[in-house]
Picture 1: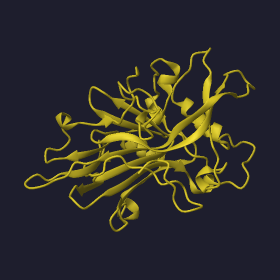
Picture 2: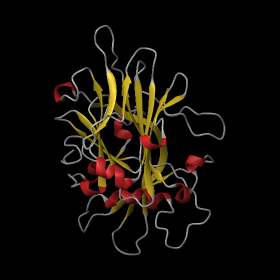
Picture 3: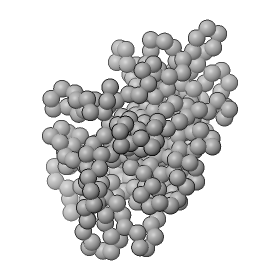
Picture 4: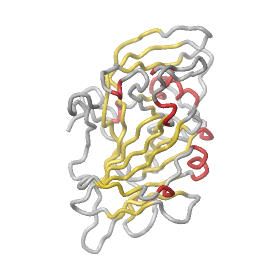
Length: 306
């Protein structure tokens, strides 16, 4: 399935998947900043916890019968930014019976250099370090870090957009540079499976909590669909009319919230991505496609440089 596949009329395009024998797919949407630690073989998703009036939704659905497995009860997950920040870092990993072991880390990025011809390429994710051609110092105090040491990361959905520049000078207008095709939905596919005497589970834990949030057996015939979303609160999601003080009413302003995570040099402009607006809810002016953001593909969130 490719990211260009369309759902029924009036619905959003259907996200692609990468691995045909996947046992789990994890999707990321909203204000989430990605990075990859090439040395540790860990993909990191930084939830922007200073994004105003947002919260984190985390769900697990079994694909075969569309049954939601997590959260099963209201108290299973508190997605408020304060709670998520207090419990970080999180790990979602494949447990082969040994717990969380660095020697079993094997996360990778799919076809990073192939974004021109491969719609699933991780290179479709808008990369700020690549655009500025320098390492960026990410403000980790503004992030809650989710670590994924297994699976392959890719772009599950893309959109056409205009790329522009915005000077840091007050009152500056956006200067349109060119058209781009960019990711609106990142994902990870995991195809590890247990069998025989080897049991493998997908486990989600917090470093600040004794018990796992969930433990899911990775077995043939079962596929888990997991969503990690950093989305607006209900009363903030689709305002009939944005009040004068509302600073994130447009797609451009939504994207510019990534700049709260790192500092620019005085002579550097901000990039602005204006997604194409469709007739679907995902493409409305109140709910534009969320453009994914990424930093280092070498040193993870804490170490820039590629």
